[in-house]
Image (cartoon, rainbow, N blue to C red; front, side, top):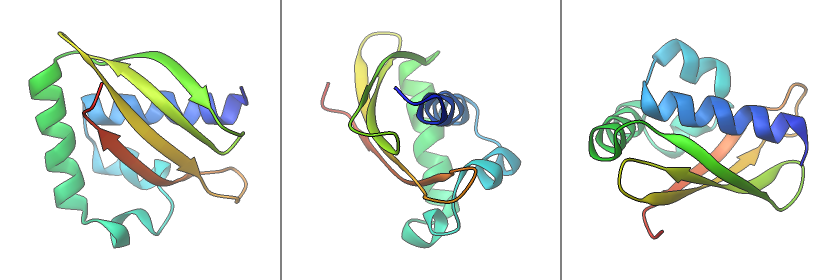
Length: 102
């Protein structure tokens, strides 16, 4: 797996566990908050942290150096986060989708 995907995954899961707007601004490409409002994304992250407790990466299934699925373990179960990085240097998260289907 490419180290930039692993780093982005770690930063994204840490942000979901403890949201900080400054951290989000550094991690996300410009389109992320155009696709879904900052307040909605923050509220979703806060709900996940409240529901799942401490979050940890169980594994990252990489499709390429820019795309993959993060399997995140919470207190009682796991969930998936699909992530895609931007083509800029350094890459930023340009899309992520949280799936509670694990």
